[in-house]
Each structure stands twice: as structure tokens, then as C-alpha cells.
Length: 165
Image 1 (tube, rainbow, N blue to C red):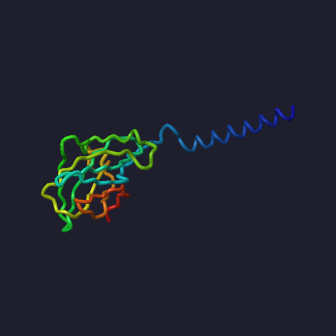
Image 2: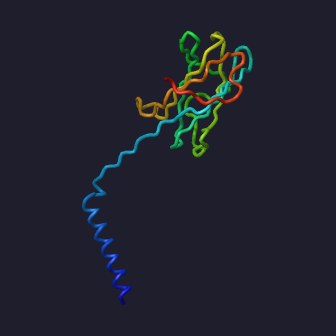
Image 3: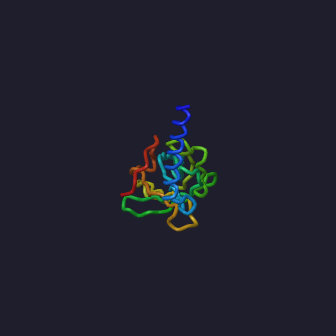
């Protein structure tokens, strides 16, 4: 009998404590704002295919698994940025899925076939991911760059994308 009274006393105290906390923080009136987690470019590799084309492989992640648009530019040694021209057969740079690699820290790989004609032989790639392209600056991830490389040799092994200073 004493044990039962003791248990009822603890339950009563716990209930009183919950009621007091609930009175101080109204759960239904507290607005909850969810923010978008921006996507990121994790790794990049570049494989020259010919004198005029290359394959870019880019690993992209988004913790919500959103599709991502990717702005990709070639920046020559003089600092002049030129948007890349894609070739037929490329995955493209719009609506790239990330859901398959939701729990992979490397991200999901995507292949972009790149027309390298008429570009300076040395430079780097600059990439900016965006998972909400219709809403200005709400889904834009951090701009990243590759180290400088020659188009003739590419970047044979994946390298970590470097944050733009």
C-alpha cells in the first residue's frame, strides 16, 4: 500500500510539473519556421575525352534530397569566367537529383559532358549549387572551385571542392 501511494505521489508531481511547463510555453501558439538546407558540391573530377571535350564528374549533396541546379563556369588564369557549354548526352546542370545519396557524405555523382573548344588551356571550374532556383537566394549553396588544372590533363582523381574565398 505504501508503494502504491509513493508511485501515485511521483506521478502526481510529474503531472503537475508538465502542466506548469505547458502553461508557460503554449505549444499550439508557437510558430515553427523550417529553413531550407542549401546544397553543396563535395567532389569534382575532370576527364579529357578529346581536344575539344571533357567529362566533369561532380558529387552533389542536399540533406533534404532536393533536386539541384548547378551553375558551372570555366575561369581562365586571367580570372575571366565563361559558363560551360554542354555536349549532347550530358546529365545537364538542371534538376540534378540528390535523393539516392541522402545518407552518403560524398553526395550523388553526376556527369556533365563539356565542350572545351575555344577555352584557355589552363584555369579552374567554379560551381554554385541551388535547390530553389525560382526563389532568389533561398536555396543557393556556397560557391566552390577546383584547383587550377590544364584541360589536356584534367583532374584524374576526384578532389574536394574548395570554398570560394
